[in-house]
Length: 234
Image (tube, rainbow, N blue to C red):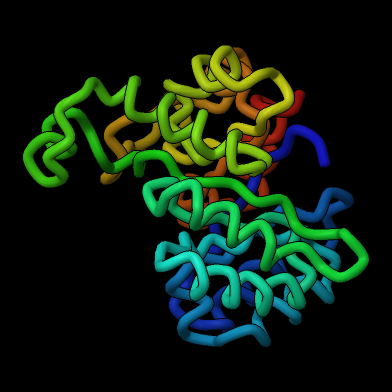
């Protein structure tokens, strides 16, 4: 797996998601697809199997966060779906992350990549302090979570593109950074507060960018996807 654009298929039904992906049937490059909570809860594991069967790589974005034993068992189930990338919340502790890794690893030693969410890109310093009672600077919090994820044996983190370079410095160049909060320079930031363009995300070293509405909501999604790939992958 190398640097890539992950398209967030945040649709309310499998019908909508598959109709969207049908538009890319003639494309040589099949989009890497993110399946999040909305679509997974609406359709269940079958939508993962359907999209995987079409040849797409899949980031299953369910952000698990529970006691270690529960997360381990859930990851054991998800490992059977043959997805490529799975995540959880770093705030669940090192013990939870280690249990997740154990559950995700199959009998033959293979597993999907496992990454941890540090702070959501909708969170800023004010909301972190007022809602979460975390008083440290947000950069320090993200770096702490990233280091704990690495200590637990995870492959990388989800973080704002603004923090990607710092995560690389703290955890090494091989530690993956998957960055949502990416918008075109001429686009709307929506509810994201810590954002960057695809070209900027490439420059600071993000491994993967997750792009939703700028592609799925575009008048021409294929053109928007191609633009995103050109700016980020080259």
